[in-house]
Amino acid sequence: MGDINYEKMNIQWFPGHMTKAQRMIEDSIKQVDAVCEILDARIPRSSRNPDIDRLAAGKPRLIILNRIDLADPEITSQWRRHFECQGIRIMETDAKSGKGVNNFVPALKELLKDKLADYAAKGQKNRPLKVMILGIPNVGKSTFINKAARRKAAIAGDKPGVTRGKQWITIDQSLCLLDTPGILWPKFDSQEVGEMLSITNAIKADVLDKETLAANFMLRLRDMYPDALRERYKIEPEPEMNGFELLEAAAKKRGFLVSKGEYDIERMANTLLGEYHDGKLGRISLEKPK
Image 1 (tube, rainbow, N blue to C red):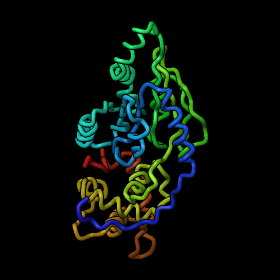
Image 2 (image 1 turned 30 degrees about the horizontal axis):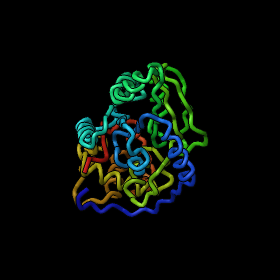
Image 3 (image 1 turned 45 degrees about the vertical axis):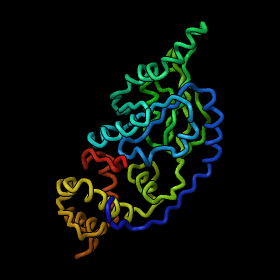
Image 4 (image 1 turned 90 degrees about the vertical axis):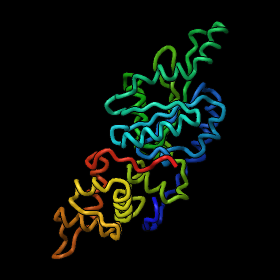
């Protein structure tokens, strides 16, 4: 992000269920033919389990970039190329509307055609493929599975690591999915990961200081999408302004007064994050491939 000075934040986030969940995934990965990871298309790096390359070593992989309706299409194309260069098959979906979900079963059968041929050669033509589904909380994993299964099959839970065991879900006679709890893997040694997950609502923003989070988000928008600030908040993002000054300028335009001459930064922070979640700032991605 260049030489922008982001405010430092104290991130209070220690997912205690991490080890237990990781053990469950390590045990179950032996039972599956492939691993499918659902990422938020706006933050493919921060929404990715950093242990997955080690955990899924040797297994065919499919990455689903979900929420493409909220992401910048040009940046999504860059991520597609980035993952394909690593030999990982990519799908793009918007699970909420169902866009792209119909390609899921054909993509898996193509990915696992050697395995299917192997089963057929052994006389196990009707043996179903088993695929593990991974994803952080609030990435749309349950919505995706329910759309793929064409019924309410997965239990939705937007709490990180919502307490439930693994679930086997039959999609059709040829495919079973192993749904795993939505788990946050990053230990947030990187402030950026914590911020990205908060801005996109994977974790509740109250884990971080919301005003600082929104001020840093303003700087990212100024750097990557200045027109969104001009159009939505009618402000001119000057290079010398810091994030809090940008928030204050937007609060001023919105008329969020606390008292004469003092503007409500907290209200503006909530408004900014809320309008981003609702897609009112346009299609905005927060990470590009390095």
